[in-house]
Image (tube, rainbow, N blue to C red; front, top):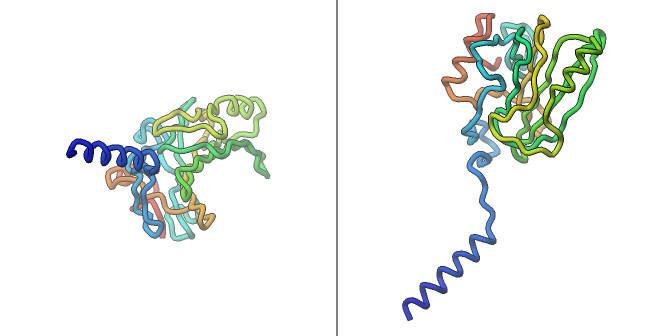
Length: 207
């Protein structure tokens, strides 16, 4: 009798587990708390010590760089700097644009982390040269609908041009606005990034 009860209970537990949906730890968060349950955030570049940050995040001109800026610019003059997924998600946008007045190339990648946050990348080789633009497009290795994991390579930035950089940020889809990315990084990660801003900045986000 006791064994029968145990078997019935075990069967009911298995049926319940099959019916329920488990939410990964990486997407658990309070919608009112940006200070994170994403526990595996990394940098979009291989070595943060090998780059510098021209501008970080700012909502107005109070930042050391003197203007509003909706992400972090990871600058490099090294050729073929690999670009990494900073956390896991689904690629929801890959496109290319040329911006006036210089008509410089910009390749855009957007990754949905969950139903609220997306990672945004603007890969900017800082040239309007058609050959470089074509080559840069070929260096993007992800497509819409692709699942990526933390550390996966999304493509490469063709460096070697002054000002070439990866503009990286986080958008909140509930507001349609870019948000301060600092809470998504550990204190040590934030400290390392701030040290790469050559403008006397004391934090990643202003004001």
